[in-house]
Image (cartoon, rainbow, N blue to C red):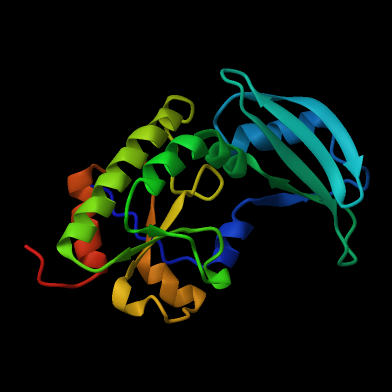
Length: 216
C-alpha cells in the first residue's frame, strides 16, 4: 500500500508545475517547449498551436496516443532577468479528462459536501463521523483510483500524486471539525491524493491513520 498522505503546501504544489527559465531573450521555440514537455511529462505529445496572449505565450499540445490537449505557457520574466519561464498545465488537463468519472463516484457518496472554505482550494471534501462514513469514503476512493488508473497506461513510470501529473486531492476531515477554518498546513494533515493503486481496504486503513479513533 502506498501512503498518499501529502503534507506539502499548495504553494509548493503550484511551484512544482513551473519549469526552469529559458535564458534566451526571444520567446522559446516550439522545439524547446517540446523538449521541456518530454523531460517533465513522459506522455508523448506534440505542439499543435502557438498563441500570444496578454499574459504570456500559449503553446497548445496534443497527446500522441489520446485526445488530451494541454497548454504550456511561457511567461516573460519581470524581475530584471531576461528570458522566459514555462508553466506546464498538463495536470489540469488530466484532472479534467477523468473529472466526469471521478465526480460521479464522489457525488454518490453521502459524506461528500461542497467545499465551504476558500482556503482549501479546489480539494474535494468529505466529512467523516463514524466507521460507516469512513468505509463509504474508502469505497469512493477505491472507485476513483480505479478510474484514474487508466492514466498509468500513458505515464506508467510516473507517480500520479505528483502535481505535474495529476494530484487529485481529497480532504477527509472529522465531522466534529467541520466548522473550523484551517490553515493550509493543518488541512494537509487530512489530505488523500489519488494514486491509481489503493483499494477500498487500503483507503480505509489510511483514513484510520489520518483520523485516530477506536474503529475496528
